[in-house]
Length: 256
Ligand code: DC
Image 1: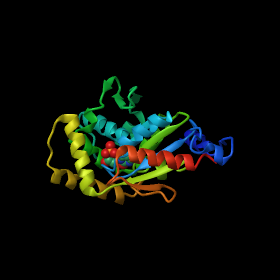
Image 2: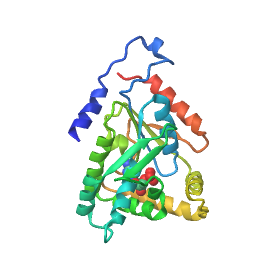
Image 3: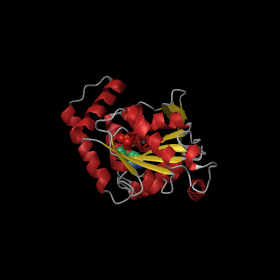
Image 4: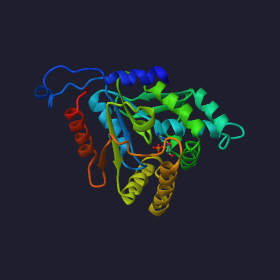
């Protein structure tokens, strides 16, 4: 959306006062920050993004949740719409999605009046989201919706193409990665927490690698590390360690 992108690029022009010396480490965190965090499944993006948003007092936007909500809406159509790109793009443009932050920094997702926070994490929705997010026209419609959802004075946004396509002029960009074995274990723990299900590790790893392949090779909005993003390998790092590293980077590079 033109309005949102120019608003976001406008953030780059905001100046902070005081010398560099007096800014660090107490550099006042501006609400105009736009922080993007991209990376493959299980790299730790969501956990870290929520905590970072909370420490910076910014809105948190999970773009994966928006694709998942579209997938759920597509499955709820009668008959389900999963392979008709123009209809999916229409659904995306009209998707009655609403995101709400809890005081604890978690995200609640609504489709119309229905809370779908948990429903969008099932295996079926995961599979359909991976499929429909390949269509360029669906992505174009979703990028518009994501910019609308981030319509705020500061945001931490996570996904696959948030630094490259959704907010190319973000003030700070990160790319998280981790060993596939660790990523699979994290997903397994996440599924256990959500549904109490014990999905075999080998199966999860296979699914993750399949989705990685789709994410990295698609034509529109592929998973890439933008040249200006800071790469963090989270394999042997704690969540708090990663968040602290990001906060240090943000403080070292205040808004121009
Ligand atoms: O991060 P996640 O597993 O919740 O993402 C769900 C799906 O959406 C996943 O298959 C990748 C896709 N996705 C995407 O294509 N672009 C994004 N910015 C975020 C997610």
